[in-house]
Amino acid sequence: MLILGIESSCDETAAAVVENGTLVKSNVIYSQIATHRKFGGVVPEIASRQHLEKIDSVVQEALSEAQITAHDLDGIAVTQGPGLIGSLLVGINYAKGIAYAAKKPIVGVNHIEGHVYSVAFEFSPPEYPAFALIVSGGHTNLFLLNEPEKYKLIGRTRDDAAGEAFDKVAKLIGLGYPGGPLVDRLAKQGNKRAINFPVADIKDNRLDFSFSGLKTAVLRYVRENEISTVTDHENISPQIPDLCASFQHAVIRALVRSVRKAAEIYHPKTLILAGGVACNSELRASITELAATLKIPAYIPSPIYTTDNAAMIAAAGYQKLLRGEKAGLELSADVSIRLQNVDVPIIDPKKKKRYRL
Ligand code: KG4
Ligand code: ZN
Image (cartoon, rainbow, N blue to C red; front, side, top):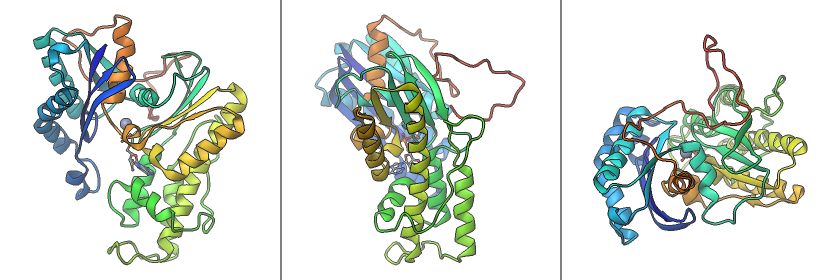
C-alpha cells in the first residue's frame, strides 16, 4: 500500500510517500524556522500563511520523488491535531482535495501517534509492552503500550514541555530560536556539574515531569550571577556553556528518572524515544544507557524522523487504512485531541484543564 502523509501542525510543511508503513519513498520537509526566528518563536498567523504557500509544491515534490501520481496512492493520512488550528486546516483541506479528486480514502492522524510511528522505518516492530517517551516543543508524554495502538499515559508534564523549556531558556540567555539545538551544541563545551539545577519533585504522581521551576531557577541564576546574555555568537561568555550543560542535564535527569521508575513498575520490552527533543545528544546517550541497563532495545530514530515530518504520519495512517478506517470529507482539525485510549480518566468539564497531553 502506498500512503501519502501530510503534516502541517506547527512550522513544518511536510509530505511523504511511504510503502506498507515502513519503506520511505519520499520525505519532503519545508521548515519555516528561518521565518519565525526573528520573532523568537512560531507566529501562528504567519505559519498558516506559509503552509498555504508551500503545501502544493511540497506535496507535488513528494509524489514526483516517489515517481507516482495521486492516482497510484492507496490512501492519504493527514495530521488532525494537536497543533495550531490554522496550520492544521491547511494540511487537512489540501488532503481532502486530493482524496476527493483522486477518489482515495483519507484518515486523520494524531500528531503524537505519528511521533510513536517515527521508529517504523529503521527498526523492526517493537516488542510489547513498550514505552514511548515523546518529547517535543509542545508535548512531553510517557506512554505505555501493551499492544499496538493502545496508549496508556503514565507520565506527562505538569507545565512546560521539555522542548519549550529548551526554547525558553535559550531565549533567556539570548541564543535565539529554536533553542534546543543551540543549547545542545554549547552544552558539549560546558561542564554539566557546574551548576546544580533542581529536578522537580512530583509528590502525588511520581512519574510526571515539571520544567517551569527549572526555567525560573535558570533565570534567577543568570540574574544573581550577572551573566551577560549572548549578543555575539562568536564571543560567548565562558559561563554560558556551563549553564547550558547544567540546564540540559537537569532536563534529562528528570526524563530519565521517570522512565527508570516506570520501568520498575511496568517492565517494558522496548523503549521508544521520539519527538524533536529526541535529537538531543545527551538524551539519546542517556536513554540508550538506560535501555542497556534494562537489557531492552532503545528505538531512537535518526534526527530527520524525530523532528516533525510526514513519513511518520503516513506510517501511523497506514495502520488505520489497513483496518479499513476511513474519514469522511467532514474531517476537520481537533487541536486538543488526546492520544490516551486505555484507562482514560474521567475529566470533570467544570475543572480547568491545566495539563498538556
Ligand atoms: O517534534 P518537533 O519538531 O515539533 C513539535 O511537535 O513540537 O520538536 C521541536 C522541539 C523544539 O522545542 C526544539 O527546540 C526541540 O524540539 N529540539 C531540541 C533539539 N533539537 C530540537 N531540543 C533539545 N536538543 C536538541 N538537539
Ligand atoms: Zn511534533
